[in-house]
Length: 346
Image 1 (cartoon, rainbow, N blue to C red):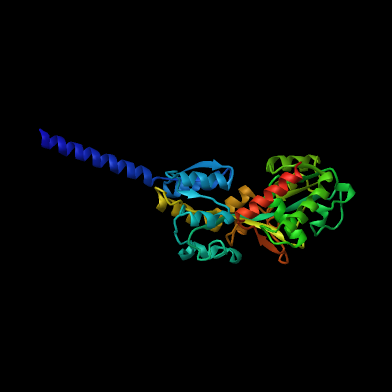
Image 2 (cartoon, rainbow, N blue to C red):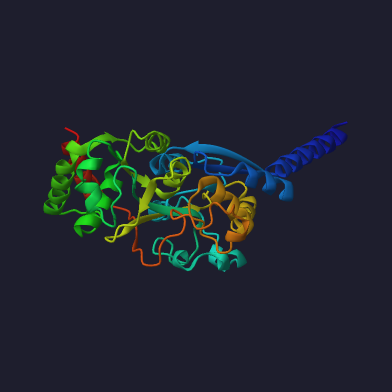
């Protein structure tokens, strides 16, 4: 009786392991910023591959980092901002999958191929990207604006109806561009220059907020006449208030990239690669672009976009615009930025 029992038990174990692996083969677990995957695209992916995507959301790159450092996250695809990628690589938290060696990498726009934060194209495939600048209401102030001077030294018509992000890193980066200073300043004199600029502007600022939804709503309602903003978010606002205008300052435009990477402890790395390859096809990337209204990193999306989005100034960066990608700051620069911000908020 023992032998048949052992055989039955072994068969049961094999069956269990097979069903578990089959289940694993049919899923891909995503950890990303909230609301960044187009439902239409995920449905199409599942229909074509039989792989079911599930999504959990995080609210900051720091939250993502902490989760991965805990280990055993169970996630297969993550979407870190480009400036955090070197941290994830140095901590050994993501695995190389060599997107640069895949055919879909040829679809990538030239300025994002093998960038400084992933020079060999081993760890991340750009998912969407965009710019951070400011916009204003031409119904309130209808003059030519091509400089951060309008933001930091606002004309009377815009004073008192301005919003600035409540993020030290982004505001200090914009101020550094205007003042011609390097990012991630560790020089107290340079930090003082930025603080002086922001203090002089502060009496004209109505709110400090990085909540994209609130910024859009207040711009549409006319409660704000100018705000720091992300390009895609501003496009959504302009769709409801045509007098809004996005600015590409001559001093430079802050740029960022959200990528797709695979955690070191992924249980379904092959499914992760399939999802990344799927999202990197022009037709599928266009779904993401239409959903988020940010730039696609993939060439050839135009034929798949709604005509209303084709030519949108927030999506089509002028050829003469100077793009400056945000950087990963060291601890000394972060501490100095925090001191600047604390002083400003007093």
